[in-house]
Amino acid sequence: MNVVLFGATGMIGQGVLRECLLDSGVERVVTVGRSRTGVTNPKLRDIVYNDLPNFAPIEALLEGFDACFFCLGVTSAGMSEGDYSRITYDLTMAAASVLVRLNPEMTFVFVSGAGTDSTERGRLMWARIKGKTENALLRMPFKAAYMFRPGVVQPMHGVRSRTAAYRILYSMTAPLIPLLRRLLPNQILTTEEMGRAMLNAVRRGAPTRVLESRDIHRLAAAS
Image (cartoon, rainbow, N blue to C red):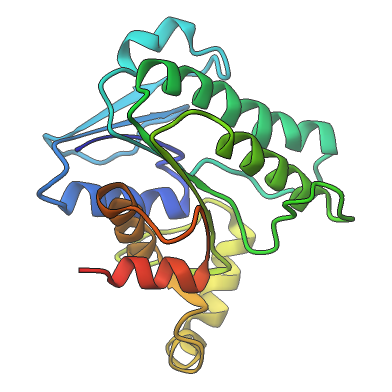
């Protein structure tokens, strides 16, 4: 399996990258982003590219992939609807449009979020735009497309969020996570589970095209 990964320096992206590099069935991983991952591995190539969402100059590097794991995203806090839409919707669709043309047999996995609004008409700006993005991706002619809607995700194996507020929150709640995972085993995911579930979605498919936390948890555990 050859994988292209967007958002590899984010918290979920770091976890997904780790699982891809550890998986013997993954032959090649290419990351696309504004900075290097800092990871050294013979399977890995970082494409550092700052002219997003214009992918034309690097199209030749985006062909020959079986899967795209799109983990790129930002918090909507303090952002206007236009700015958030440009990053969440416009950038995702620009990448997906190029990838589906070059790799029609690709499986595309998009990291959305719990509470996403599929109707696109709700009161929460971020949820509407995430829903709009999901709906547009599901209409595209990929071999398969899956929308992952995690809620709480626990960073594992040294993975750290780039957002300072999230790092503080995770450090404060870390002692409670093991208890919460026992009480709510299907609701709290790890970055490791996110990566495993994505790989399993490509290999085996998933029971639904939109996966909530409990679905991701089960898919990660599939043998």
